[in-house]
Image (cartoon, rainbow, N blue to C red; front, side, top):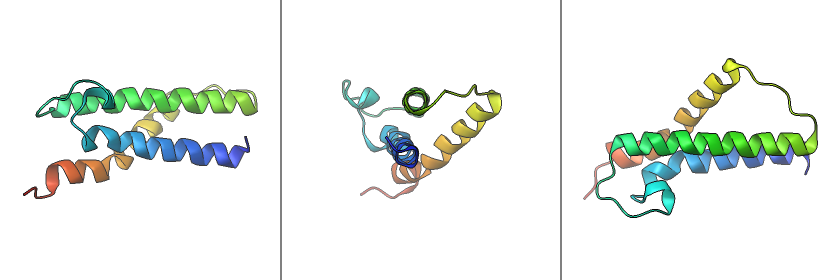
Length: 99
């Protein structure tokens, strides 16, 4: 896969997975439906999806070239990026008026 395409794939996947906990009431998108699902479950799901994005990104990096070692700064930036990408879902779930 072309390296720029894999970067866009990981970014698109991160955006979708960051919003997924806020857009449905199922546990981890496939589990049993919970009404209402609390904020703690949504944050646990967000952290799990962050791990999925890391795993897929590392796999794509390893398939294209040698995987570079990452320090704590990489994971701090990734966590901030996932929280930023989750903002539209958070606004839709908690700040929008539901009728």
